[in-house]
Amino acid sequence: MAITNSLAGRNLGMILLGLWLILTNLLPLLSMRVSTTVTTGLAVLGIIAGILILLRR
Image 1 (cartoon, rainbow, N blue to C red):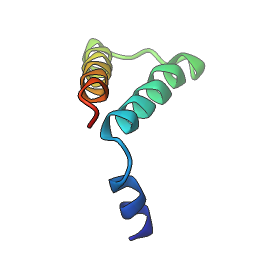
Image 2: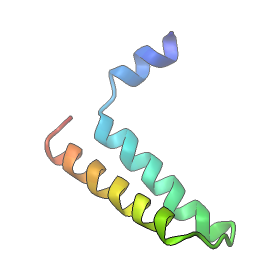
Image 3: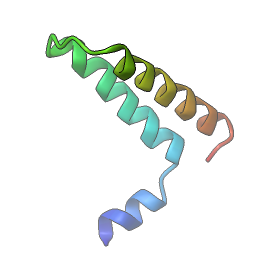
Image 4: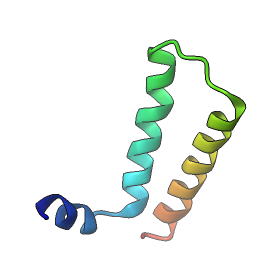
């Protein structure tokens, strides 16, 4: 419950941004080749995070 309460108080856009940053930078570090679907998914995640940050949600 403590984890849920601490995440609820955080900005969703910042959580998504953090997730996007980790995934985007982890893939080249591990020398993984990813499909176009994964690349598109990461791009969409970044766009959603940016929109939520601009809307302050």
